Image (cartoon, rainbow, N blue to C red; front, side):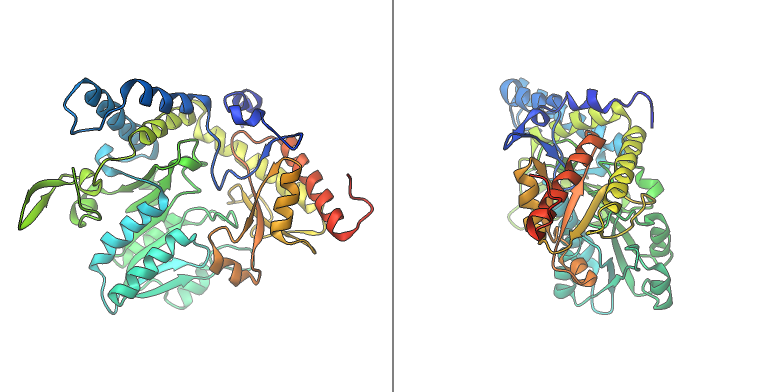
Length: 418
């Protein structure tokens, strides 16, 4: 990791990290759920509403011009951040779920009986349910990659069964699992999809915030991510798409600004990306996301990825010392993201979450919007810890101390500390 990466200095940019919960310093380890926001992002959104608030594109006055310039400027920043060919390839949505629904409903409009859509068993519901709905509506068949014992996609089994074949029209895969932390070999799968003429969609919700991103290198045709997991506001997501593909696809929503011309008998469509952006957009949120991208780029995504790797490795090592903790997915920080789901002997994940919260440690408990994956693993739910660029080793130590206390409390171990 770069010697310039100063996590204590970075933490000073996040006002919420100064909070205390029940008299304990806040230890925020739920960044895969939503990240915290640096002051500069908070200030950007506040300043927009205080000084520049207007609708974009349609308001032909000074404030409208300022808002439009900032909004479209954010689009250009985000395009550069992910290696897009240009800002016209960036479609604003309200989150990854909407972006993936946009992909499913537009690409899915071309599906029919006999066609197949391939996903995986480790997908977030946002990259599963939309494809289920499309298949139910069109008569297409949904198929999926299984996982091996380590929690990685079982590519060998998929090859043996011919999972991706001449009937495959869409393959949609998470870059990084939000439960197992597995970094999937998306480029390899993209090549397989393209070899049979399929469209390759990537759910990059857990990838773009943590890893340097080049949509071309990933082999994606469409790629979705969300602002609130990468230091930006809630209510803003992105679908990147190849311009030639976006031009082929039908609109997703109808309304203002997505049209070329409207008559009582029909309509024509605006150029991309506006064809897919009906109505008033999340303007302040997009501008705030642009500032978040500026912040991430100032630090450097390579440095952030290196820090995440170190924190993940440290967390896995500390958990390995607790013989009543069982990590789901890879137990070494190799091709692994920062989300670490786990179970604790004799303690329900919701009890783990609540007990840790009583000591100021914020984690998540449940199925993490990946219920089929948990069923595949033979468990109803799990706890999950997830760090980010502001996470420290000391916070992981506090997590493990709180877990030891929680386990002792529920099992009656005398070693549990009050």
